[in-house]
Length: 631
Image (tube, rainbow, N blue to C red; front, side, top):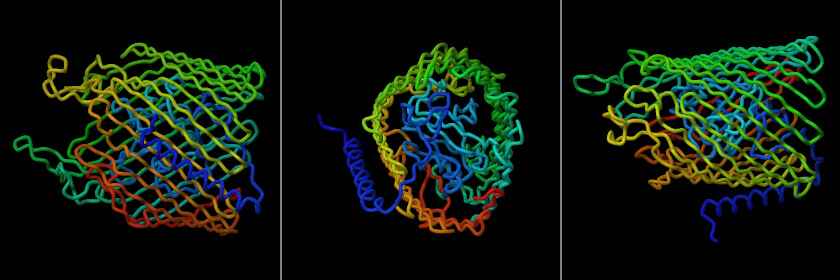
């Protein structure tokens, strides 16, 4: 049986990565003592804290040190450097952005902040441009089907953002930087604990004059030569009180405001010609508030509860503004039972109420979702087993059942094999259901079935991994242009279940510490096609690579990151492939103060992140970072 081309390329890349790791380990590690890192503990892969080597799935974590050391200018750029993730952004930093996990759409990725679902229910996705990197402690990524744990929209996976939680002596930290395009960053934080209380607070502000979002001569005639900049301000507080050993109540509040400019046009009704001269702006206001409790009832039993509210408000337009507001109230009750070491059962109940208010939607549509989750994870000598099932009942589209089963085997103390199969679904957005002249209330959720196999190798500070996956998605929601195929009364087309898709690919990653050098690489191959037309899905690159190297000596750290993205279709156009190079240098002037410099897109590569949109060219930054407890 012959392998498809993407699989052959994946095997070749895997061999190359293994050769690199093997060569480096024999030549360099005989001279150095390997550092054995702590095993990360993740929540997202099972809803309960588990060591990453206990989870059966393609999961990873971006920790605080990685975030602070990265040259990424935004959360979406940070995520793009992880395996299995591509980015869709309408221009440079500050413009609307989403991530696509394993070839799925941005609407097929669940984004959580401290367990709270965020994003727009009208669009059905999360605009990551509204989230500041300054307030993030770490990011956990679950690739592959996540609906059996988190419900609707986790076809491609789940991205969970964790904010800071205070512990230990008080720490005061400040970071400030300035860059080209009149760009600036300023953030400060304080966190720590005192007796039974813990606290963490962050304030941040970012701004840039930017460049024109659209290129001259765009096909729609929307280009405006003015600069389309942005301002983003965020405030975050997280605190808790441990009123008895093993019992803590906490609160979390996040407020983020993004004001960004973009290019569009008003239309003269008499001539139907576009007028791109107005100053078009997005005003996005994201608010998240939650109260939670976690307690160890006994050595075997832990219970958690969380009540939260999330508001996503967007005003968008030029001479007139259109409003789109989402309000979510979520209640979660979860219990974990560990009858013995290596065995854990999880049961959870969730209630989610969603209400939207938009000028284009009649009234204030609302829906509610009740869900029950059951999960199990177990370790049996060299074998690991993980199983999740979930039942969702939604007032708008009825009942959906999803499940996932994963098996893992430790072939050696350093090498693990896994196989995972699961189902997932994407719910129709409020626009799909209720938008005037477009929405259809009877539209069905998208459904997916996926399988994956993977290998993971860890030896001290050396890692390598490979994942092969296939995902079949049916009932894709899109635009049906023929009024005859729409319900009566639709004259200009409508939302409909229009197609099926096949997503298959391979993700490879490796990291290695060689003396003073830290190396990391990811290689992605993706075959994402519409099953009916045979065309590649929009904005999906057939392959994407990242390679990074950091050199550390004394007070200096110098690094470089290369990201290579293949050509991808976007509407009637094909976007050219491109490669960017980011450089950085950090100098620790004192144990508490560090001077930082970076050069983004050092080769001044001009490329389109989306059709007719343009990104920043070369951008130099200089900044300083201070921490009262040391860096």
